[in-house]
Length: 274
Image 1 (tube, rainbow, N blue to C red):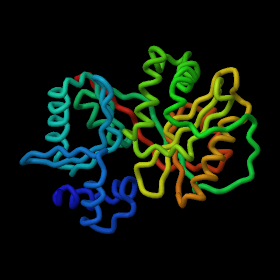
Image 2: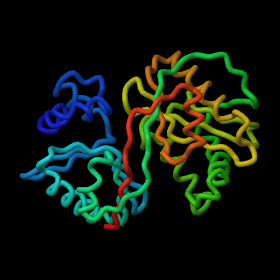
Image 3: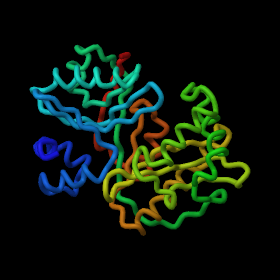
Image 4: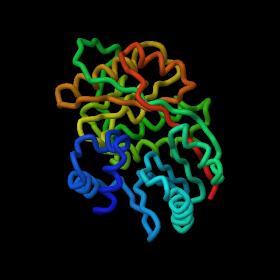
């Protein structure tokens, strides 16, 4: 673990993004040991640490840290490890400047995502519809809502796949689920919009899922839910709220711009059939 901690501490951009409270290798080592979201790959030639999420036969690597001279060994080793785990498809998010070398390894370019953030601030907000904290008890209703919200994009093959995505969020697989700062709008028998938050970096919350039924869009429901979330986050001592958004999604980009979010980071999604 000490070798990994030293590697991470040398990469200040990675450290700032993922372990901002770590002041030295010892802090890095403690933070990594305390979390189950980080995976380490190592052999005699190279070492890498990455954040890995697995769903069925699909894997997503959202963060990766390695030395420049270990790229070939790590990219080949990672592919081999995932193949042994029966993973058939890998998605990787990398800075656009690194796309060429991943393309040379057989990866295909995909969507561009931007990270937006702002400091939570309390506000006086008037809910347009009743607000409830979204918990696992609401998963059946939220699954129907999530599937309907993305029906035209084919993001989910059926309601069950939408439910699987929600359970991944609420189980803590993407970071601690913040149920007290996650809100859904509507009656208990008819939820029409939801904003679900998680946290995997101390002091930083992220909007993991944000979705509204097509018939209830452009009514300010998402804005109200985000404002309610920020009120709770501010009272709980969080210093940052972030969200990842597809660069091409102008509607969502304008929503967050109006709420004071600023762009912090850009990544390119790369995919590989293993």
